[in-house]
Length: 323
Image (tube, rainbow, N blue to C red; front, side):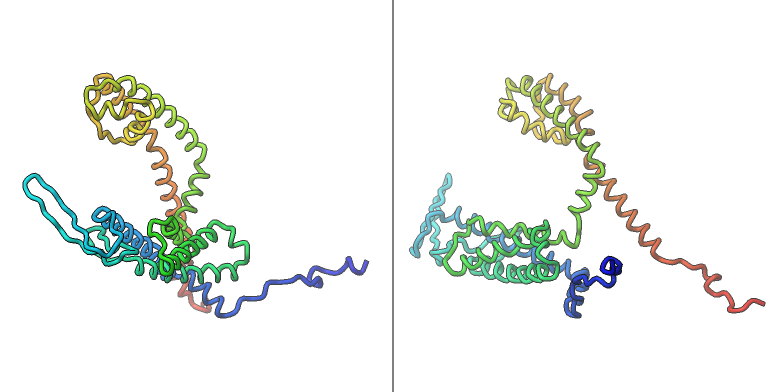
């Protein structure tokens, strides 16, 4: 009876130790906007370096696809009037993909530079992942953000070490895993979280819209197949020579774009109904998500205004004693 009468305060419950000052400082720094900017810079910057690297791979592969030695390679370009001979020298036999250009900006990205950038970014993100794992516990490793953080550094570290040591092929799929890093700023932006919340809030309307859109897509694609399969225009006949091809062409028309205008008379009649009805139905999700984001912005502004205590200046300057 005495054991049962003990209060909850008398029962020893293991508690998590209070965080140290350094851990608390890291937590506060993680909430600052500069952290979001730093993570975004590293994530998107490393992806752009990979893009430059793949552009260089494509350009060099087009110019010298059979470059396997250090011998000079002669490429002959034949035109209608003249023949031009250009001598190219392969200076990197193990990695012939040397430089690339993107958006009219020439930037040299070779195997070593790409490997070093991947190594640096991967080590930084690995330290970040390890710190969060220690701070938040093992449950963090199986959360969506934890999985994104893991794949932001582990494949990049493996590919960087392979590129710098054993000469991994630049076209290996491990190099492409760096694109997952574009999801890492989601921790601070929370764009996909809001998107999923809006999706759950309006799921009934979106389900009905998806069903109607799918039925319209199948119906008009089949009709246009029968009306355009004998079209004298080559492009029209090629895009509507089967129902699967018509599905691909019609999904563009449902969103208001008509890249192939040479329809037959029956096809133009069907296109009129498509433009009147289906475009409005397919735009319903855009309207729903736009209104959802606007409502959340208004709620955030109202919450911020309500959190501020507004006191009238006369009330704030009342005398201490009456009389």
